[in-house]
Image (cartoon, rainbow, N blue to C red):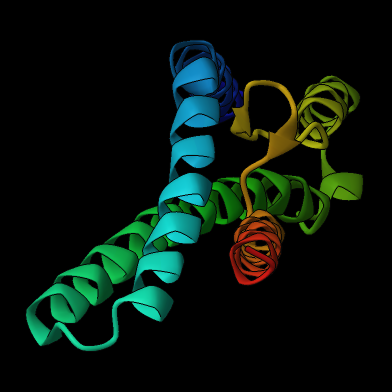
Length: 155
C-alpha cells in the first residue's frame, strides 16, 4: 500500500508538471511553430531564387536544417511524452491486480483511470505536438512555398 501511495504521488507530480509546462509553453510554442513555418518557406524561396551565390546557399541550407531540426525535436519530445504517459496505463493493467486486496484494486483502478488521460503539449491549444505535427508543419511550409513560387513566377 505504501508503494502504491508513492506511485500515486509521483503520478500526480507528473501531471502537475505537464500542466504547468503546458501553461507556460502553450503560446510560445504557437509563435515558434508559426515562425518556423514562415522561416522554412522563406528560406526555400531564397534557395530557389539565389542559385549563383554559394556562400548564401550554404547559410540558407544551414538555417533550414536548424529550423527543421528545431521543430523535429519538439515534435519528438511531444511524442515521447504522449507515449510514456499512455504506457503507464498499460503497465498498471499488466500487474496481477486480481490477486490484490479490494482496497489495493480500487487504488489501481483510480491510477488506471487517471493514466488513460494522455499528458500532452499543445501549440496554443490548436494542435498536439507529435510526429504527425512535424509532418503537417513541413507540409504546410511546402504548400506556402509553392504558392509563393507561383506568385513570383506569374510576375
